[in-house]
Amino acid sequence: MAFLARLKQGFGTTFSFFADSWAELKKVRWPSRKELTSYSLIVFFTVIAVTIYFWLLDIGISELVQLIV
Picture (cartoon, rainbow, N blue to C red):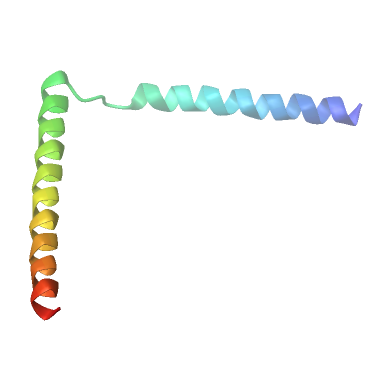
């Protein structure tokens, strides 16, 4: 009997978790299509810029190592 009580309690907390999660998702302010596009472009170009920066840094360090060796 105690097993069934624990099982019921476990499922109760699981269902409660999903109900609470769904309630919180309803409170979220989702970005508009324009905002989403803008944010995505900013992230894309930032990743490209950081990639180019580290690529140039890698080339510079490689050249420095070649001069030393």
